[in-house]
Length: 143
Image (cartoon, rainbow, N blue to C red; front, side):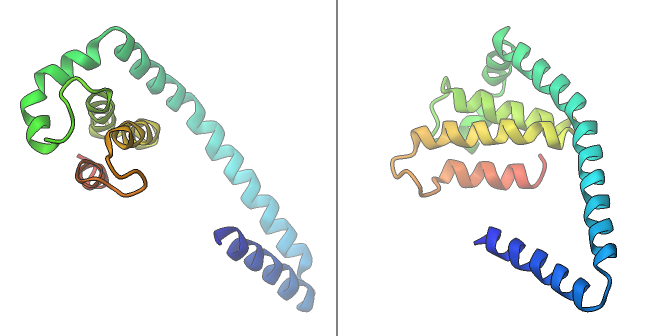
């Protein structure tokens, strides 16, 4: 549905630009927007690669599991449906750590992985569980 809305907006911009003899301005604006998007994306690649690589190293070195073990009492109270040794605990902790460090863009893939891990525990796939809703609320508040 969103694709149709974007298509309608683009077609409307081109039609109005053509009607007002400002098609050159519409084209220039589109190219400037594309240039800005590429500049922003390239700037984010380096920092995301660095932090996601560090998170992967921490995970493989067992640091994530150690942190999860230390925070187990708190996490068990927040997420009673999630087994303490489940990978979802580590994914949620890494997402929260990335958010606490102010790495919102690097936290996004970790949050998606945490949701995927929580979905594997969900007795009703496709419907958000209590743990998923709690994690979403915590993640949205940037804790």
